[in-house]
Amino acid sequence: MELSEKIAVLSAAAKYDASCASSGSGRAGDGFSGGKGGGGRRQGAFFGATLPAGVCHSWTEDGRCVSLLKVLYSNVCRFDCSYCVNRASADTRRASFTTEELITLTCEFYRHNYIEGLFLSSGIFADPDIVMEKLVETARKLRTEAGFGGYIHLQIIPGSGAKFIRPAGLWADRLSANIELPTDKSLTRLAPQKSGKLIFGAMEEVLAAENENSEDRRRSRAFHPGREAPAFAPAGQSTQLIVGVSAENDRQIITLSGALYRKFFLRRVYYSAYTPVGVPGGGGIPDPRLPEISGPPLAREHRLYQADWLLRFYHFSPEEILEGDSVHLDIQVDPKTAWALRHPERFPVELGRADYEELLRVPGVGATSARRIIEQRRSRSLSYEGLRRIGVVLKRARYFITVAGAAIDRLDDPKRVRRVIAGTDGGGLQLPLFDF
Image (cartoon, rainbow, N blue to C red; front, side, top):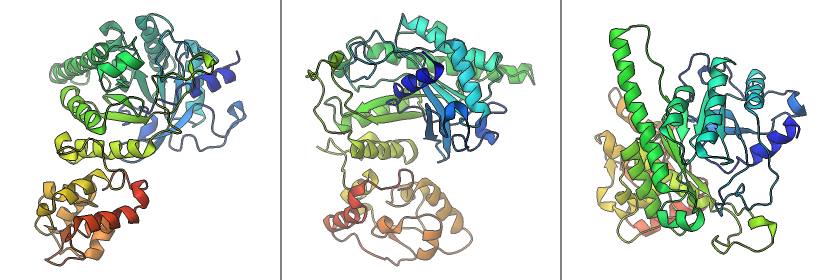
């Protein structure tokens, strides 16, 4: 098979993995420090494409768009996870790269300014340690032989041991072990060859290696200045949950995410709306284990990302995001607005006096605009027009705030306010992800 054909097959096989966004690399000369900006936008002749196959656009936590080469080492897989396009029983075209092909491809795309990094995973075509060894070897040779300074994200293959997880973190910027399903019950039903215990064990191994590396770097700074030990996975670790393929509700998903952030200090939990992938073996008989849906539940995925943002940056607990008997997020309004409408006793908030934590609870006030409010009121008075300029979304905030005692609107009837906000936002699907 020609290399261009492999790229087409193995990039398509990787597209359902959402966990490829980047926090950037701390390596000298990498694309995230400005040396390779604009990846994927420049016209070029490599394989005759303006945007080559396998290049995906992703976003950093500060909102920058970056381009990554997102491919599988191989889409040959021994596992038969019912929801996966690459499962063993799927009637799909199979291909595998060699390590040398991946190195050449990555360096060529990087040199042509198509990409700023590599996201590499694989089907489980052999023993997990063998597969993980191939991924680590690719990353190691990119760094040591090809001189690649861009971002590298490696997926940890379920079942691989510390022998390969530890060196993976020395060559890669980020590692991820995908849980995919929120409970052991769903894993047993839909992906019986996978083990939640093994996946959590991999996360524990990454965390232990991070802690040991931090101590090694501290000692090297103290006793050997200028010879600091290399960082272990400086962009941390992440995971992915598939939304809508199993019966778990939003409360179960958010509770799990909160626990993962607390226990393993993950940088991100990614949520991937389940996309129907066809039938086993191409035989025309639907898998009875899979839900019958016409398309991916994108609105639910969007709300979970917003709830996740509340967990990580707005100091909400899972119990606050879904309270009482509620088990699913409100599709019509974002989760912070839903919380505020359930707690009218907390509002209005006087922006001239509120502390940072109070400001974070106001719909339409994000973490950035909350800091700007505090900074601005130190030197001059606040005004509603000024709030617009610093990023406050007044179409939501107007019901929950006062400025110098003056209000634009009132939270006199939470049901009315909910209807207005839901209507203004067109059902909530166009809400900004970060500043709400």
